[in-house]
Image 1 (cartoon, rainbow, N blue to C red):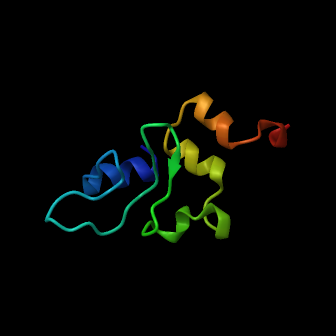
Image 2 (cartoon, rainbow, N blue to C red; image 1 turned 180 degrees about the vertical axis):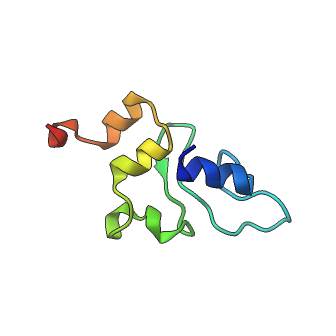
Length: 81
């Protein structure tokens, strides 16, 4: 189980990336919306801010186990050849 999946399981994170439980949302995590668009909530951990020194976008999408189609939408595979 990868780090993001383990976090989701441990903290009972729903599909919208918000923590469930005692009536309070603490930190949100990246997720795909109903249109397969990557959503990185403003209150996500800074490790998910790929644009400012966080994880690489490719690695984040891998953690989310996105489909090849979604990966192709965000990552130019020519950069890896």
